[in-house]
Image (cartoon, rainbow, N blue to C red; front, top):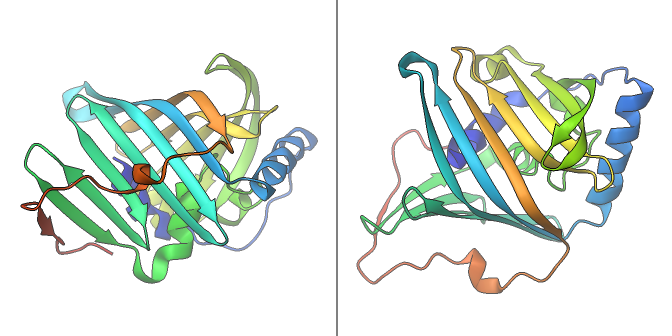
Length: 228
């Protein structure tokens, strides 16, 4: 699911900012402040992918990590359930390793690198006001999420291409920490992905081997047609 979101990132480029409400401005400023000092983050996650046509929900669970140094950003996801899988974003490339079949699938970001990285840290170390470059952002009050009283933000893509991928996105932001504790991505056909984060740790040391795929000497590497 992570690489699908990364692929969508390039569709959301836009320019005109939106007039913000005082409540929204407060949340976005807090996110800006967190982004200015952001170095690392790690969290436990549960991702629910709902498919409307079959009325089924697939669930993945594991840990996700982010690391920023200078202008570079890396992301690693260790998916433990229902099957072991590793996702690594590094050097402008998404790598998905499936130990069961001992295969790595590569997805190149190419010229869309900046957009991908912006989308990658959506609610997790990205600047709040940068959201308004790609989305119409509205404040929808406060409600419980992730054990917090979270600010609920609704994001509507500004571009037609973006709306073809996501109808809208909801972020639940912990105002005290300026980070997302829950996200929901709605697709036009009625499918959605709900991401819940817990045990969030900011700016703590993360072992370097987290950002390395533990492949074998026989691992097959493929680069599918249509990767970006």
